[in-house]
Length: 307
Image 1: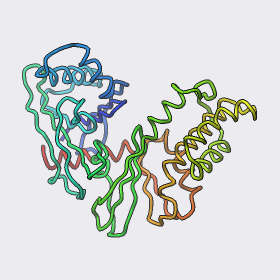
Image 2: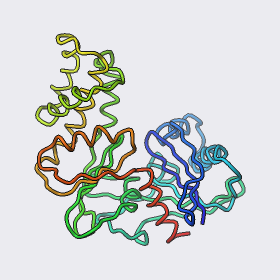
Image 3: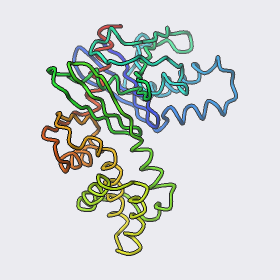
């Protein structure tokens, strides 16, 4: 069976052609047109609300056209992420915890194809608790193996990082951290923008991580500037120092927990989080899972049940 796997997040878009029989991805299309950018474009059109789904389908059509080969009109599309949010193509209500590793319990909206867009869409809803929400991470969770009944922590870094707490093969709690968004705002739109530029410096990252674990971010963030002014720290060094500060601030809530930690991320984010987790006390078991592979596994489980 073949299907199109779409990860339509806040700031990124990714579409892959998946062959479940061969367990392989035969093509993918990437763009920076995440849901926020797409929604802004939609609002600028001034079109009636009833036209919204059609507008988003045109974005999908353009992405499908960039995939290699001939994509049959009968190939379904499974979409996870912010596409099912209030700024997506169609808002779906959140499901309530606990999270169970069974796709049959997922809230999936089937949208039958039409003349303009013949592919059938399967839109995946997210999960909520009393004071937090997630969309997209539920698909990653489904692609992970809950293992035995012992407590585990799954970390999904990103624009809005998630820590999901699992026990007895159920997701019973989670927390959201605005890690990626705060880093971008500080690095690009605050007074710190002229003090940082992308580069590598493991020692500065470790220094920032340690400070992030110990201090208040509203104070420690300003030390990025004072490092440049008073200590002549380079901008590349400061970039990693700021990254360490932000990641350390996120992970400090896990300090002292002895449950195994599963980091589910792409390869670009992997080094910083793995370094930070190893620097922490009390985190004895750390495992890495490639987010791209896990996401497709999650969608494949959905495809096996719903398609």
